Length: 87
Image (cartoon, rainbow, N blue to C red; front, side, top):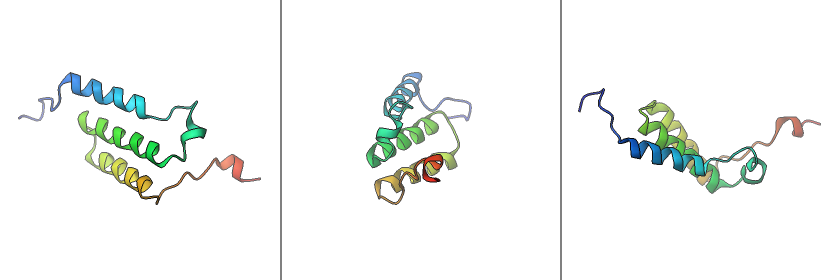
């Protein structure tokens, strides 16, 4: 396969994008779901998948996957809103 040949079909690219859109935490749900480890991990893993499929940076895909694992293992937690914690 040559580097200019797409690795994935358009259907695959579209489906990955749709999955990420469904899994991402939007503005309306952010405060309710920002501490949900499974939701944060799923959002990050789908972002890593989309990045890979769209021939993005391998380093960025790895960073997103590592961050997702950190959420799953409980190593990462939401730091809270900076403007609310100073007071």
